[in-house]
Image (cartoon, rainbow, N blue to C red; front, side, top):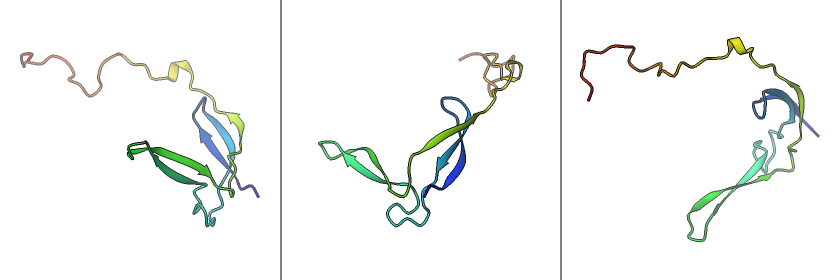
Length: 95
């Protein structure tokens, strides 16, 4: 049974998507939706984590609607200055 929820995504563009939710009382994954498996390289050092999806959850998604972008005049404009840097003239000699 699919448990639907609405989620916001930012990539590739801001949008609302409809997605499945893992079963919260699942004994295999504890409601996370998958089981992580750590693995190592040939020397035994940690090399990453493999993710195995749990059968209680499907990675099904559908885009409901793209969210609008800010108009160009409301976007932030950078002037190239550090906002936390010194504000102007200083009496101290340069190093």
